[in-house]
Length: 143
Length: 416
Image (cartoon, rainbow over the protein chains, first blue to last red):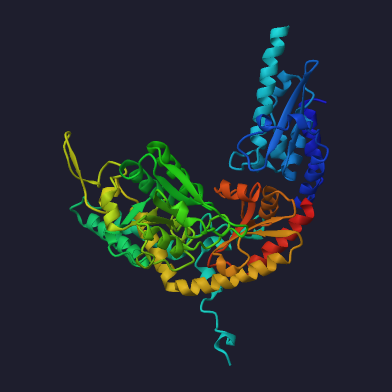
């Protein structure tokens, strides 16, 4: 599934919810499916800075693809992190670096990607792209 | 019958007060707004908005320089505001009132002056463990500049300052700076005791009254405090303006903070002589509309009566603490007694992250603050990432508290 397909699927899923409570319940549920970061990587240097809720992020590069694991101490943030990872994990660094993330806006949670809300999702997305760019130049070197 | 059992009719009609605040009548996400973030900033009554509007509509002009009619009117209104503020906190002279950008700016002014004139290597500044970053960082900067050290009055489990060791802590101290009311926990600090102890050693005191002047009567002569700072926007006035009160002799001792227009007497390229108090500390064109708005806010507060405000808020605080205590798993941080608090209720529910709680409350039209409230050392003291903070103002009512309690219950169900 491409990054775009994955986003469209999430948008379609969220269209089923009329009520914001149901939407949040679903997001919190998704947090439980998050590929959890290994304890050894859950340290300060993997902490996304500038957020009230803490988010740890780790990237693994395997066979030309980038895989993310993460965790957060806030459950709503954790659910959103889980969604972003669902969308971006397992793709090539180039696809991740080039990806346009529109699903957060489309499911009515754009405030979570706004710099006025310090929940770390925006910083996390930036960090994922930075990993992608870093591994992209690394993989180009090896070719 | 003992007098205490007779119930006095409430002196203030909150329903009438609410009508003065237009923003309280808007909705958020389809719900009527419940605004409980008053320790961050209060809403503004029509009276304040009208005073500022009238200023711009009728007398806007630069102060102190103009020969013309409007400038005189603007200067008179600006100086009348200064006098109003002096009366409000009972300053001896109106020139002991310095207009600043806010409490932070006022503290920075004093800290910069102390760094230049008073602090030396080996000296220290004493703050408390419940300070806002604004009353920590300026002193850290002053200490860095001079080689002085920063010392801290500790706090107990209830968020109250521990004064057992105060006398020992005062050794080598050149200034004590602490808040009247803690912004993160709401505890009312033992101001008189600390000022008394400092004065008995000849040490001056700065009181950060940002969370006090809107809730309690503050009299600088009665407190006998050297410096006191507060912000307009937390007492129903406009943003961007605040007050530094300083005893005349101390304001004379401190050097000017910023250079520019208004603060000078004569300027040549060789030498500038500085203006008298208070202008020495007011470089540049001041916030005239802000000063007039603040004076209108103070009129508003005086008209309600600070005694009435205090008793209405104490009633609501008691009701709020009782109501919130009924919520399973809710843990109040800070003083358990409503009488020991002003305005602020900090809490956590089970192990729910404050940010999650704040977000789900927001979705129900309830505005609270979450996080460390610019007081990270306080959160470290309790080993918590932060709290949810509901903070009260005079326009809040029992319905707001009931909505908050229902909102917390709904959020707790969703989040645990």
